[in-house]
Amino acid sequence: MAPASSTSGSAAPLSEDRILACLAGYFPQTHPSLLLGRGDDCAVLKAGRPLCVSSDLFLEDIHFRQSYFTPEDMGYKALAANVSDLAGCGARPLGFTLCLGLPAWADMDWLNRFFSGMAEVAGLHRMALAGGDLSRSEKLHVSITVWGEPADPGHFLVRGGSMPGDVLFVVGSLGLARVGLNRLEAQGRQALNEWPAACAAHLRPVPQVDAGLMLARAGYNARPPALMDLSDGIMRDLPRLLGLTGELSVTCPEKCTGLGAEIVLPQGRLHPELLRYAAETGKNPVHEALLGGEDYALLGSCAPDMLPPLHAAIPGLFSIGVVTAGGGIECNNAPLDSLGGGFDHFDAGQDA
Picture 1 (cartoon, rainbow, N blue to C red):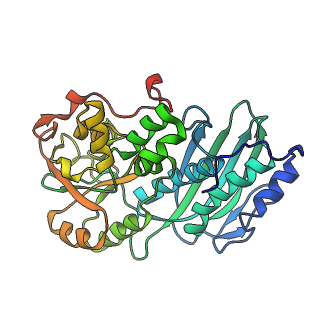
Picture 2 (picture 1 turned 120 degrees about the horizontal axis):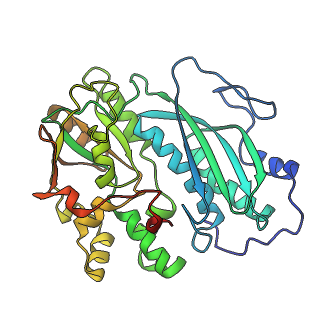
Picture 3 (picture 1 turned 120 degrees about the vertical axis):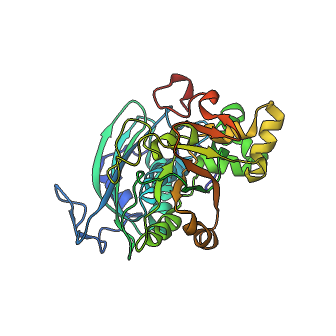
């Protein structure tokens, strides 16, 4: 990671041609998934089978702050958050488009650093940048659309399909990014010295792409797991997985009505930095883990006989409970709704 130095290192004015030339240095023009890449009015995708598509916004002072995000961090997280959506569908990333609104303070030095962070994620997953748009804006505005293909063999995974008796599982850490956000807000980048894992979880989340692909393959000859990207915390995302938000499952709406869950989440499953943060602030660490947003872990359910091979094959996968036939959700024998809500973009108190 480059140091968080000043972003005023280039006095030359920005122009679309300069920005596009800079971008071309980080993202190749050609890619096996593209028939036609950047430069025309549209890109042409080489789509021989169904594609999985997702879009996200990444907005200054809503999703990040300049005070503790470096340009590299901004570019990295903007794309990584989108890639996590593909992981939640068991998809292999192929490419993305980038729409970028740049404020007056952005210069070529900042752009090089921003694109280098984004290129780190794109290179890791061999993703093509197919096109996008550029504009001026008052604050930094990043809009990304990603697409991917199903695992081979395998199908895309969806949130619906859980059944009573299924095992609930998570791949990744719970609540760690929440700690990182809290400490970064309070201490700025100095928090990296005391809370390295938590800050990294917030600044540079790692999408669980390999785990998503393995889960998709596991469901090819069996009942597929239900799966989703865990980005708003278990408090908000588990009801979505179980179909309790009023949205019918596309796979089995008649089976997804009235489902509940019994969660067992011992403190020993939580990261040491989350436990230390809870001890220092007098908070309940399990509650923090359930409320935490932006973990970019995976949350899913599967038939009980599928869990042992998945646990052996996927690092970081652990069970957190079972799906029940009742409509309520409990954690460690306490009703989940007693803890309040998870992350909501429209809650003014939860902005970055």
